[in-house]
Length: 111
Image (cartoon, rainbow, N blue to C red; front, side):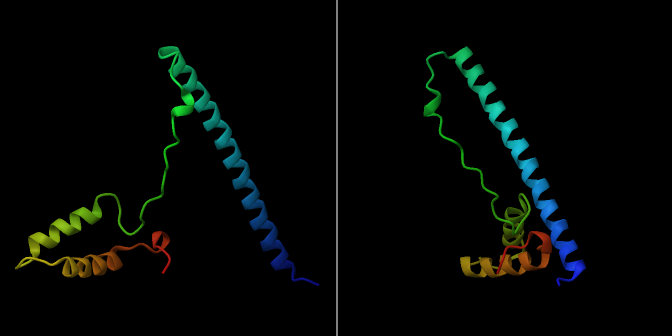
């Protein structure tokens, strides 16, 4: 027979995932409602506007190596600290070692 602590852990994980699914469905329903309200507002101000011409905007999670603005700051600091002009390869090496130092384990990209 299966170990009871294993089954308990699996049941807990399943309950957690089922809860997340419900939350995502509620969020999806709210977003669909919001889009409907926006469509109505667009039609109110521009009755002839073709709503089907509006393409969905892709949303990405972006990179996870640096926080917002951190990469740019590191590059500018590298230029300021360099005794001589930096090649792109040298700059990449500086960036990579800085990213490894500041990277947080919970946001680190997969290898």
